Length: 355
Image (tube, rainbow, N blue to C red; front, side, top):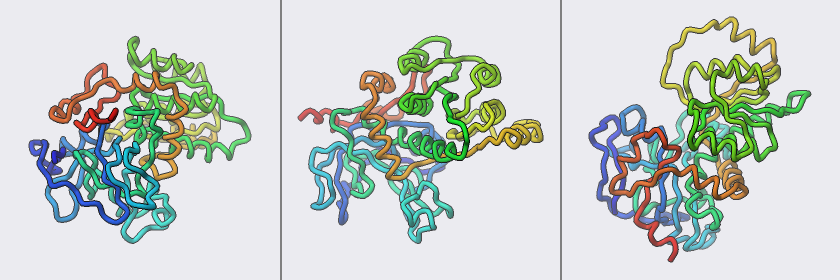
């Protein structure tokens, strides 16, 4: 079978490799990927900024945003041949920390977790994948190809769960959300904010095109300009920062309503920035703000994501997938184009999805 592989640390090594088909272990499903979403993490791994092969191996099979069809399923797995599934990415520690032991492996305390296609465990970018049944999430068949959005949506499901837990400390109801960035993570954050009945504002740079249209079709407000200007007008009491741009991170922390909850979901490329730390501290302290980071997701968040996608408008979701690339040309999916929102790699098995 063909698989997308790379030697972490060597960008020139990325390519399609011929590998033996995996053998299903006890409780494993054998699945045939249909679509594989591509994100910034994949680009970082290929460009030698991230990634770790399984112990004792040189190459890593890439891919963590999976939509697949079940080929075989063991008795008692809860899955059947033909089911659509997404795959959970992270696996708990071999000797679990307190969080991993409770199934909260997204909150791992000691860093000994592994992640499919990222850290110490092969990913889903192969024509056949062995997927542990406990880490397979069933996708509503009516979603079809849109189920490939389950993994990125799980990141936002976790973020919103944490926002609501923290928000419960406050004496006033949070009603206005600011989302910075209108990429796939920002748009899915906006979707879930709209599903909660919030007044949602999305800030991005594009003056026209698909991003403003998608935001407005959610019933949300699309904004350009600065966080400071927008916050002065709208006073957001929830901020979800989805870009990792250093200045936007600081602005999100500094410009919001009193008692705001600020969730940071982006990973910053720029590591240094000159700021007035004292002024930032005073803003957070004197307004009783909460700022927290959120990454990865556990099984509960994948289930929440699947439900959010199931309730969403299918036509709207379909517009998030702006480019499909065949497996043979998978490297083209790494190129970030101006008009891209979500790019996916399409596997030959997808031609069999209708029979």
